[in-house]
Image 1 (cartoon, rainbow, N blue to C red):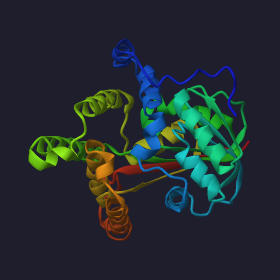
Image 2 (cartoon, helix red, strand yellow):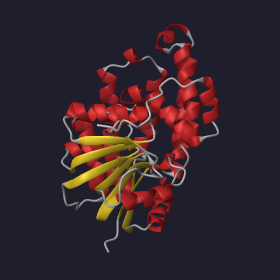
Image 3 (cartoon, helix red, strand yellow):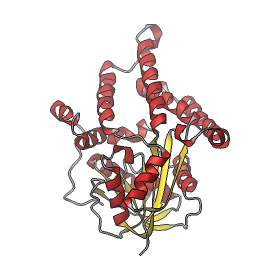
Image 4 (cartoon, rainbow, N blue to C red):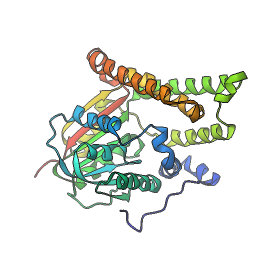
Length: 321
């Protein structure tokens, strides 16, 4: 359930609101994520089945391989549609959950997903720099691809530590590395240009989305450039977590070959009509990602410095008195 004083979703921002959001990152966060909330799971191939349960649990196991499970009460910061926490709960990581996001639309969808899965989850619209829960509330705080959206990351981590119980742990995954973000954006722009250019001609025109859809994607991309504030090296996140007061701080990184496949694939999917891509494409995309992940984990991680991988993970613990 959510509280009655939370603001309502606004999935249809006006042109004036979008213009204002270009210089107001928190307004941009709300507008962009309210806009995306109802289609977000499809856009990012998010599900709550074995595929994504294994992925979410794999992130926790990678950074905290010896976790004493289950945690009691867990919160997801910047929950989106609940991808990380709900899948972790399904894997037995926590028994009760709370979802928080600056976007009312995302909280609404996350709570709907939780209800559909039969999970014990409540939710609040929340600014990550001022979390609306009491001190010492949670045993675990998690987040996926959220810290890079927050203006003051250190302040947010201080808030995370405040709401954690002494000895409680936070785990954040999916944060873009500085080098990874550079090559991912370059490949995405190149893929978008190539796909939208070649589909202007001849029989390939049937593979082209309508101009209205392409224009809407371009407007969303303009806001996305405002909401993506930071990139990190593993050491950056370790330093921020330590400065916030965490102990037992540890970072990890993942996805190099997998990111070089994944970003062009996702960009191509956004540029062509969905009905053109069937189960064969889905098998190719997921199978290719799994093979590239194996290459990352078993070969590249042993020879390539961690800052070259796309995703950074960070964990830390609230000190005990």
